[in-house]
Amino acid sequence: MAEKKAAGPEARTNTRVPIELRVEYKKMNTFFSDYTKNISKGGTFIKTEKPLKVGTEFLFKLSIPALADPIDIRGQVVWVNTETTQQRADVPDRGMGIKFIYEDPTARQRFESLVEKLMKDSLGDLVYSNLVGKNRQV
Image (cartoon, rainbow, N blue to C red; front, top):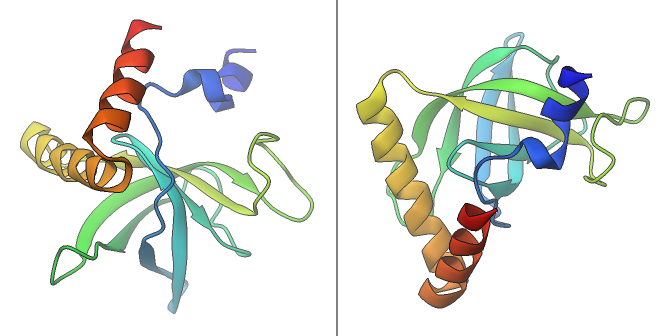
């Protein structure tokens, strides 16, 4: 039962914001280019018809418009929605939920600051503050 809860929306500890960013990764010597549907400090959802298996750790490149070069970040697939399996009924799209894996606390802080800036740029300071403030009170 704990596993079921971990996959549900209530398990999220970070606010997600709908942001579309280009993602590139490799699977068995084939390169894929897909897009995120949303992002938080802890993870992202990659919309794809060919998700990796749950538990897979992989390195991917996240293209952020404000930066000249993509960011390399490690992630782990924590759930997938496919044509035959929908582990997250609250997400209508096919794809995979990714949890970010950081090398150390400094890398985490640096990336989380970047995500926070993306969220503020996307939502505006007031909406971002209201959204994050509301989630912190829960």
